[in-house]
Length: 296
Image (cartoon, rainbow, N blue to C red):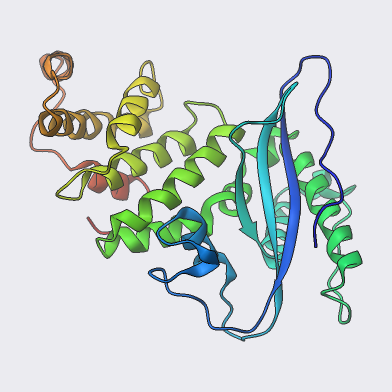
């Protein structure tokens, strides 16, 4: 199934967050591809890894995968759209979770019901796609829904679990594209210095720098994390700042860059009585703050 036309661009010079499902596809009962294989004609990419994460089913039955495009559109379409693949069950879990948490806010939401026949018809897929777009558009207009754990789980849950598993297996080269794609999605939806965005950014920096040879994009993400951490006040997130500085200090040394500013910052914090040496690594600090599958 393919959307017949793109959603109209916002008017009046506004920039709007847009969810669009440009296409959906029915996947056959073939075994799920390996992360090292050529799934979807791509190898070692976020799309490949995400396909493995979201498209497998233990029952071997056919199912529909919806490609959810996340964009910030203005007078021109978002030049860097990002997408995630989700099934009906992902949307249903999101709806059920929000309905239990905020029943009053979900009263007027029409969610497509399960059907016993015709699951794979183009008409039904089109109707569901339109309903899912409206549902996501509504969520981001209501702060309590937008900031809920249910919505965050919908946006990043599958990819983050897979990325953490890959990091635990020391397969960072496959984890990094997943984390990059997830970061770009969260960065479009939430504030630059929101907890979920900064935590994901620090995960990305850790994934890029824990290999013997840093990832080619490691400096870009590390520099962004340092900029984002300026004036951060969230006490939970501040526990990552010293490990982040130490990670960047080591990375700058590996790249032959000037480390004086980082060293000065660490010295300043040390003079304030903050422990700057002998602490956890960035990956360990992240794991302590939000334990998941990775153990580094």
